[in-house]
Image (cartoon, rainbow, N blue to C red; front, side, top):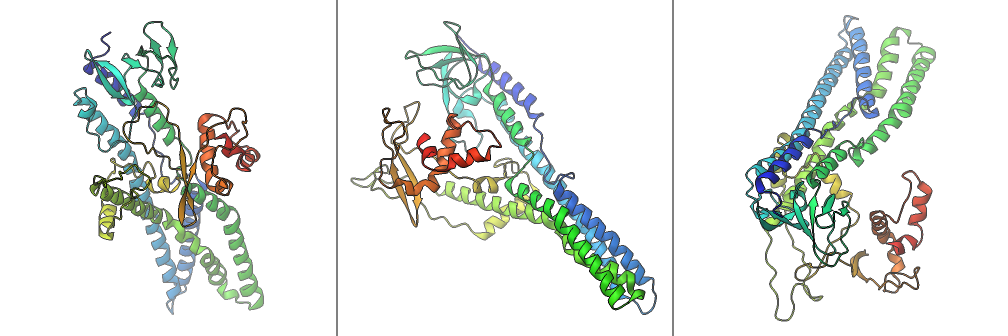
Length: 460
């Protein structure tokens, strides 16, 4: 079986990439229909109108010149300018985010057009560890990553391999579903009936269709909803009532009615209008945090050195030095990269579309493989768990599963229960990934039961 040629595979991959790329939506950072937008925009416009009315009334009173009236007009103009600047920054940030992801996909398409067929020939920057398959291309067997397998390829699977897409066995015609593991001892040849790249790009599109763009934005929407529906109306009504009582009933300054009642009420809600600049501060903070992470990553990549084994200790021994390195990042480098990211598309790191800073801050579990030599086993079995322990860390040894005692603990160390607070996120992640924890999305009581006691940890 000859399979596909490199030209046919490139044509299929490029067709999938170009057709799916246009379907990826990019939501704006500030939705005009959200509570946050309505609260900021409505409060600002209300304050601007009230300030203009109050300032025009004070200025029209003639001599002596009312400086407070001029100040009200100046404040209204500054709020309008702030509104325009905020709109400009938000529009520019949304446009750059749209171009960022599109630029990344265009770069991939450009590399594919000049691809000669070998995986080592691709130059797409730093790539994470990927799963490769043995594919028949141009009459020869080649190792290809999952995303370079095309519809019509002949793939050789061995025991333990997972099907990268829907496949059909060449000899028997049996069908394999995506993600199904091959349990036959002898190698088999299969036809690929799908292109895995299509599902991958569709997953990216699904990620960008989410209503909640980030944790910070969701929190700010909740705060803005409370402020706009409860806090702001209460403060405005309380200020208006107190000003009417103080200046209209107690002191009877009826000739100062507009200035006292309207001006004082506007001053009480003026700080809420100044919150219009929050999107600018959020963009600046996010850009600085992303620039800091990118500069630190580049510094670590440049400072990589080979581990020098000692006489009787190599890098995989228990007594080996920890693989840590002290790298200092200068504030000038961070600010310089921040200035570049403020106006340019970062299609290399996707810092805008992936919310780089918040994504890194939301990590709860880090899983890594530390094994000498080539990883030859198709399904790796964990042996130890490293957890933080006060000012140091602890290493917990995993016990062999006991089929006779299903409820037995899976950690061999005595007193491991005190690490339950840090083990629960890992247990829930394993339970969700394995399909054991089948909970309804809104079942708060089931999530609470899963977090109580050692049951969830034992399940993982």
